[in-house]
Length: 102
Image (cartoon, rainbow, N blue to C red; front, side):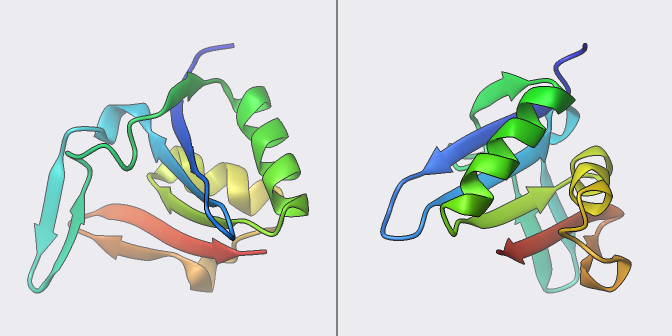
């Protein structure tokens, strides 16, 4: 299976997990007063395929994590797992993102 996602776990009292479509990393998307900055270290994590991403999501969901999710492919994985509804997805410059608290 192709590695299409970047995942990075930021450990704190409640882990924050960044998930991003690989093709978006390094970009800064701006629309009006809103921006998605994918140029820094926050989203630069491990390259994983969809199965590994699902394993990480499942484990981190049990740990009460928060997820920052960017990109159509990443959002679709969360939707398929029932963790994101269409109404919870926003777009900036044509790029979808969601914040997920489990």
